[in-house]
Image (cartoon, rainbow, N blue to C red; front, side, top):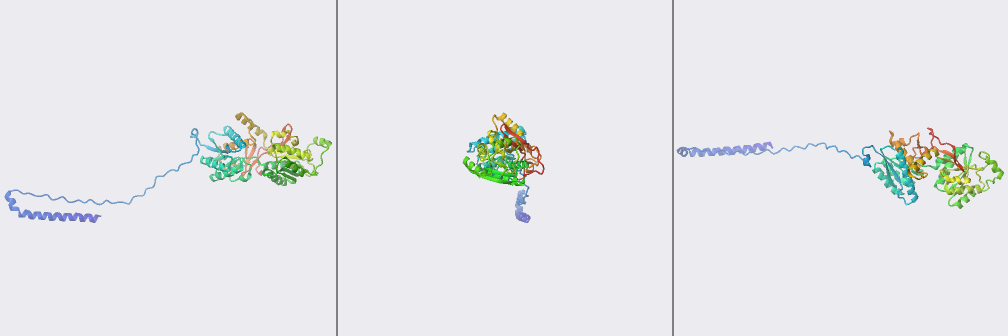
Length: 450
């Protein structure tokens, strides 16, 4: 641009010189006239034309953009807790399920969780109820909502299919789940089952019976999922302790089916006791008959069905004075104490002393008795309160603490598989109540596992 600017200035100067020369000639030609007049006039030269330089356009300097802070998801935050470091516990239960029993159980579980929050929680623990509607899809939606609310841990759901659906969501978000189902197929990879697995109860009662001299076991029970779980546990644990299943009989249906199964189990096996033999056996502590085809029979039933099954066995000459009746956690029912056929039977169950304290607190606060599984929600929320106060937080390492925890049902701990291990006591059925014949352990041995 600079050479063009110089040429434009030079052209203006040449034009100015020529103009001056012309004016000089005119002045010379007119000098006489001008002299006669005695006056001299001059014309001022024109001003030069100034051409401004073209602007210089520089390349723009690229500047670093201002840093933009990413929004931090803080989750659900009640106004009265805005200044606290909140730990959020989502409780997923079937509050609006079609089944009225499920809805009632959901309410009792929620109340038990609230009780634990009041008794064990700090001021920064937030309980967030979510409705699973009693369906897998409802459980999935509830889990998604819980994650969006910033849940640190999920308590529930109640049923196996719902736990499976919610667990898929929770695993993707790396949020641990403490569920209440006994369906072991949905456990693991961050999903833990706070329940009473029949396998644990069978393992405990078989181990105790073996120490009393039992070698030959029998099974009489339903051919359903629960019954087959008990049968498999009986088979596995009797083999571990040097025993075996000597007889088995399954049924599907009502009391008539149970009667036929009882007859198949005991047909031609035992002779009825004489009154004298019965009186003699009552005066003695029970010991296994070394000649008996089987020395103990497990009956995985509860309620009215169990009250029917016991007398059916006695009618087939399977007398509890000779054969020890064994049960599962379904036997932990005060109404069953009224059935004489079950007196003397053994089953494994949680620490009743710890349970009594929970039941008293629940009745005091809510004016009604808790359900059998309401304590599961109490222990799950108590565990959440405990983990919130620890350095490891809600990590799997913290949940799988090897020493375990003490809850409303006694000692428990979770394994890497997601299954629970419990310290169970051994109880004997009596007409005046349950008698603890071997207490629950207060600690876990480091090498203990199931």
